[in-house]
Image (cartoon, rainbow, N blue to C red; front, top):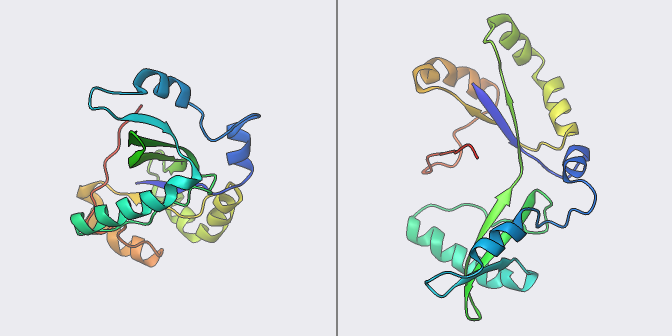
Length: 170
């Protein structure tokens, strides 16, 4: 089982960003490589005046898909960068990167897992101290039936109903 949590402002986040972090790390290369495309739009950093248009686009996206998700709070430092796609002066949408923290049980020792369950409040306190504000559990399908009752007892619930999570190593 793997867990990951979303980071909120805290010492780990600030330290990881280092001096001079401006919320757009990694953007110059991306912007330089794809500032414009053959379809006539281009990418640029998010600006606060984009929010109203992006909120409207988000509402249309959620309505069309039949499923919704929270609109990102661009002031939240966990959103490490955001790129807006636009054609002329028309904002088409955005790509937003959110920092996460991931922890894993390595080795699968049953005693270790039981102790982690017993000490979960202490573990949660440690994670909150690092800036985590939520946790996600990734369970192999073959173990889901056995793990579901434990996860419910620990306060986990299915997340993002209607969404299937995907990931990719970079």
